[in-house]
Picture 1 (cartoon, rainbow, N blue to C red):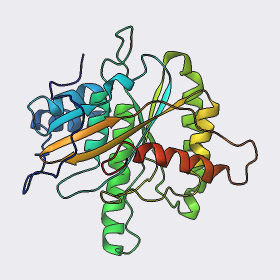
Picture 2 (cartoon, one colour):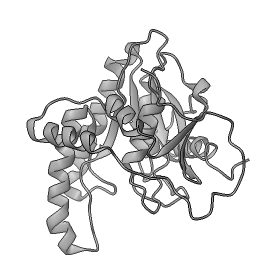
Picture 3 (spheres, helix red, strand yellow):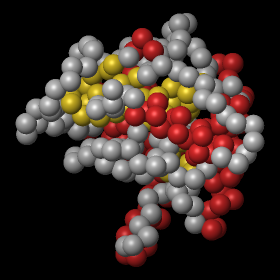
Picture 4 (tube, rainbow, N blue to C red):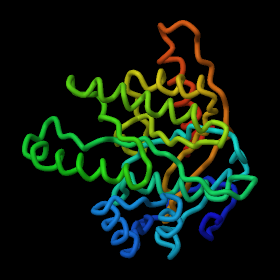
Length: 271
């Protein structure tokens, strides 16, 4: 399996095409199969669904830096969490998952294990909080079960969810350790929320979390996802191992700063 056919070339600095944006449309067949899996609990492959989502050329996608993909190295894939008009965060996961297709030298395919929010929360909208938060909690739990993702309480965690968040962190770290030799891929959008085209600060504790994954033997693979005219661009940087200070004070900020800089280096407007 290889990434969907697309134009792969060095990025040319230019203004986005006027009045043009990607046509984000997941094929109906993918939605129907996913709905069936949510109801039955049948396992699904995010890799297969990602390739299917781009198969008809909507949206157009361009992959940059495919040569940076490590053949078998275990990695935590970190990316920006942008929010644009007509753009849904699902396309971040779909685009990166499609880009990672066929990365292994052995040709063995492996899905990326995404860390995803456990629910959408609406602190300032009581009606949505009562109606949509429980619905998304149910949906996302079943989505994680079908794809093998890990649900994590949204940031900042509610007081009653602190323990659940700690348990989710430990689950991811155990996964990293257990499957390190198989080249595990763990996906994470460190911002944890929509921030528009510009990156936002990482919530407290994210740098500490990434540091734990690094200590478990994972390198960091930075990815930037953005629009260039009517094309969705997935830009892949070089893997690196951030410095993780031995002393806890300041460790969170030090790791976060390194990871944020690496992701930003894959976004437009950064020299």
